Length: 311
Image 1 (cartoon, helix red, strand yellow):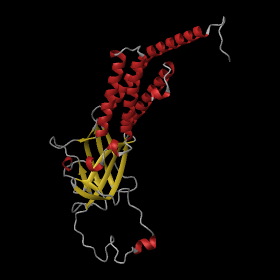
Image 2 (cartoon, helix red, strand yellow):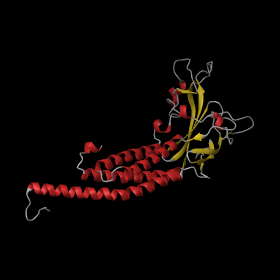
Image 3 (spheres, helix red, strand yellow):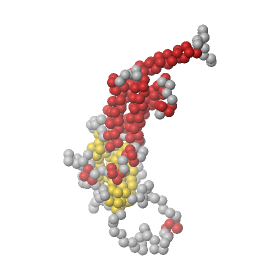
Image 4 (spheres, one colour):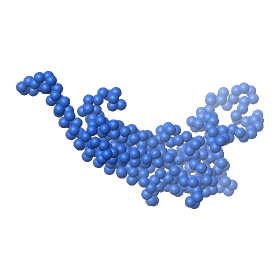
């Protein structure tokens, strides 16, 4: 369909009318964004409420699905784990005499260190930063200044994206390196067994427990003819007959520095529990980020920004 005006307008006049219409649409969009920012503020407040420390908290089961290796639960209140009782039956972990399992209980005394989920601390801070950005956009700056609102929306999009990435926890940067972020033994009563790493983190909005039994490389070891880690003939008969054995876990054979010692991971166990509150936070953050992306795209069109400028 052709677009034309009658009577015909000069090209210069036509350009002026187009610019005027574009400016009118931009002003209308900036006005309507103020209502949208109010809705966004409510969504962010809902996220902050879900992350706030409210009793009785969320009690989550942490048990292995197809084995008796791990059985127990933890209670999360806000960004902290305030209660936990877990029974371990790991082949590489010696149980106390007279007991078939090793029991891990969080200490319930004021002097014990707190078990804080640093990822949730970061998510809570990022949500609060997003609320500050919305407040600045609505009340501090000029709400009809397109460039100001555009830059605020970009900042808001980056902050929401970082918060979602923290809840995903897909890499060591977001969840922390286990050898630096294992729970302190004094958090438990009795303390953790030696050379046992206990790490809680967030992955895909779920609470994930990593247990690692460690073996120090400083232990004296006298090889014998029946040892499985040497070969007197230059080749391993087991490997020749049955093929090379698969690694029991992805960190087998790697060296790590843990509490000032060089260690290897003998056994690694991963157990997760879906957290409904964190799933709700992720869903809300995803929806809010999508809305912000739509506003940025609309401003790009009306401000006639190049794609390279908006990235």
